[in-house]
Length: 150
Image (tube, rainbow, N blue to C red; front, side, top):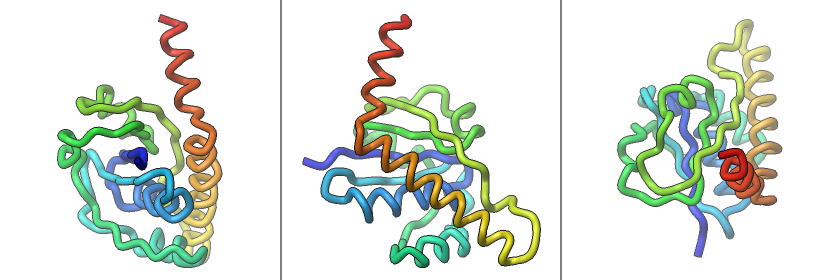
């Protein structure tokens, strides 16, 4: 049975969408990924979709409110922006919560190519950090450490 992970962000238009798509494309045999926002933008940023397409991932996601998932059990809930980490201090559903923050590529300054490079960098950082987190079950180590510190 596949494990489930939910990626939470504020707008659910860039970082959480890229994380969802990357996990489903790269670890889809082991994990099923979802994404949502605390204040969803209502769309997926075109540059996020373009950055994914550049590496062969066609993502059909849509921006959703986190509340839509409160009745769903997750093995892991990952906040990917500081605002979501602060505004979702308690996940009311099942699942361990960890934070992996990434800069918001939608705030990139400059022309299209400069902005696209920021999206690529965030995509690549998410790919490395999130895929490693799920592959190596690092979040389970974090749980053990949290209980040890208590």
